[in-house]
Length: 211
Image 1: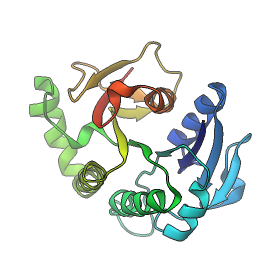
Image 2 (image 1 turned 60 degrees about the horizontal axis):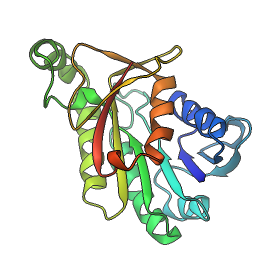
Image 3 (image 1 turned 135 degrees about the vertical axis):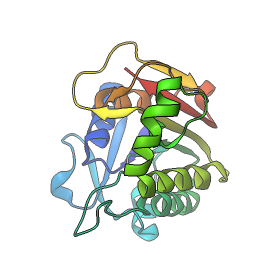
Image 4 (image 1 turned 30 degrees about the vertical axis):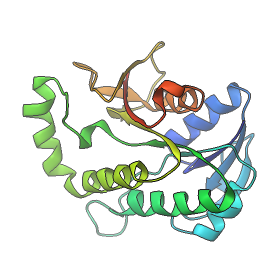
């Protein structure tokens, strides 16, 4: 399978690229600067909102994995707080133009409370929501954009992303939170993204993942 990884220069994107290559896939790294692309990948330069450049990057691929995230830029506390929703809209338009129908997007469990354990729902997440209100609103807007589309999608909702080697097997829940587990390695997020490409049970579902 030929897979385009949007945001391949970030920690989640690099993990996706690594696991995809290990699984025998060809990887197209969609990055803002060619010098930041992971080794062993084909490089396509595009910004998240550039539909024309994304369409070119997606030509001939079988699936797209979006690893966009929020970064703090300038004097803004939360950085670019619409990049996920805007990026999803641009990617979906580019996918339609390029004839690609499979999308996996890394979301965030922190933006949602349905089915959480009591500690998360009533203590941890209300605190986190006050700190990350705008980014979490963008995360939910991204998911709504993708859910309303006509592509075959999977939304991965890792808990707090951390460095380190992922647990095997990792824990997952289709449309339900994984109780009492509060961190997910970037490594596991990458592995789960690649697993999602060939797991029909995850298609058109949000899947919570954690180590």
